[in-house]
Image (cartoon, rainbow, N blue to C red; front, side):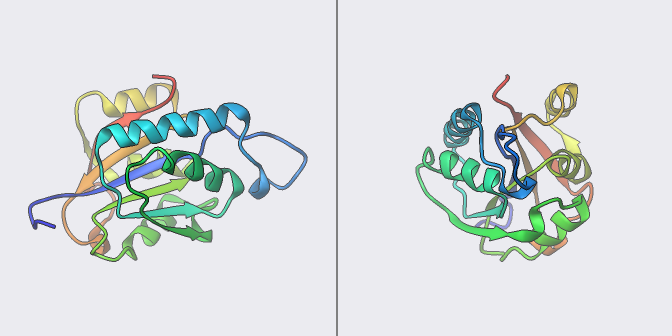
Length: 172
């Protein structure tokens, strides 16, 4: 990795989940969610970001989202299922990202709202074009993702140190 090349974080909200009478952690994806997760995976592939590491919540719906999305990518990154991502605050999610090994350049974090939206807002000190306005106009949809870039080691990631470079949702 070049010193001048920024790191990228993709914050990916799980796709549409079903609402059966089971615990929230065990909720599976709905049919639409499986389709949207694959579409999001194709969009990530089209973005051309070679992912080094995936950090995924242990909830069933995030695991299924990642399973359908990663099948669309040209390269399958190492995946770590992390319990701390489920129901995490932005501060807790930053702590997880701060532990990322520095040899990982591009990281995707598959999680939940309100965490994904809040973390994007907290990290993005700047935004390119209308990305923040589009994200905030309708909320952080299911199967949506935000791409942020920042310079420095993972342990230096903190509020307002990143730039929001892209926001995509299946509804766009």
